[in-house]
Image (cartoon, rainbow, N blue to C red; front, side):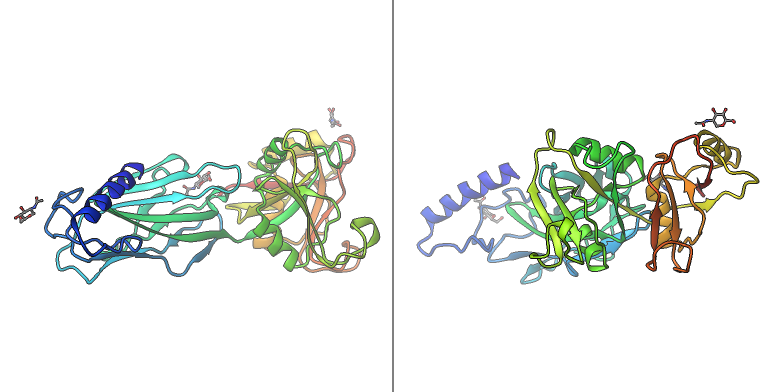
Length: 361
Ligand SMILES: *[C@@H]1O[C@H](CO)[C@@H](O)[C@H](O)[C@H]1NC(C)=O
Ligand SMILES: *[C@@H]1O[C@H](CO)[C@@H](O)[C@H](O)[C@H]1NC(C)=O
Ligand SMILES: *[C@@H]1O[C@H](CO)[C@@H](O)[C@H](O)[C@H]1NC(C)=O
């Protein structure tokens, strides 16, 4: 990239000094570029040809474990008769505080994928110009803004496409109570529960669906926010309207809050273990293992509630030592009148309850 641009600047200077009429360059139109510079397949001699790259639609949604196709095409104007070998590069653009990551590069028939995308991505190539990216087995970390970039010799054009995940946001507080997590600890807390720290967009979508939570939590961009549907005195007062309220960016090491976690579909099964007795926490862990499963994580229970419509009016242990149950059909004696996952905090591990287990397929 850097090299391409340096070369480009140099070439433009050359062009300016040789031509009376200035070349339009910010739309990447070139006249009489020196033969072959960067175009080793040199069948053509650029003359006023524009490279175009477009992504449509601009956003795509997927659930965890599914495949996603991020659309992208390139073409030339006016069109060319012969095909050209171009370099294609897909990258995942950073959220605040994250690193840009390479996803895939391709040149001719060679393709390489990187990092977490290794062997999970390829170009669709339905026809000449189709450089849509196929991601298989989408993971929670795949969400974000992707750039599709085409480099043909001196030309370098790109488009962006957003991959959103369908899923569920849940507020999370560890067993030692409210406002205990630094940003790093918040990331770990979500990961431990089969989730990631929610992005603002994810929390915003949850707020639109009615999420109202009076404790502030970290988001993936390092800000701390909370969603309020019913303004009330103890939650920032009644003067502010409903909305997602922000404390802004907080110090990632020094400040401590709760966290909003995000998870998506779960592969496998989450179920309430049918067991003759109630179990203390360590017995509950063992009972799931005996059943060929593992005690379910909080994120797995939320995913099963959301995607598998799990509905069970029995409180059960989860992996973090919390006690919860999922309700899709609200009814008397099963918590509030709203659908949701009911939480009873972290009881003493000596207490006896049911348990939720998770079995992968
Ligand atoms: C460009 O290519 C043409 C035709 O192959 C040739 O006549 C000309 O000398 C070349 N110019 C440069 C700068 O290489
Ligand atoms: C999909 O990815 C997850 C990790 O994100 C992995 O555990 C699982 O085995 C993968 N599934 C397939 C079918 O590759
Ligand atoms: C759970 O019960 C078992 C068997 O009665 C006992 O050995 C174990 O110490 C108990 N653990 C907890 C955390 O209460």
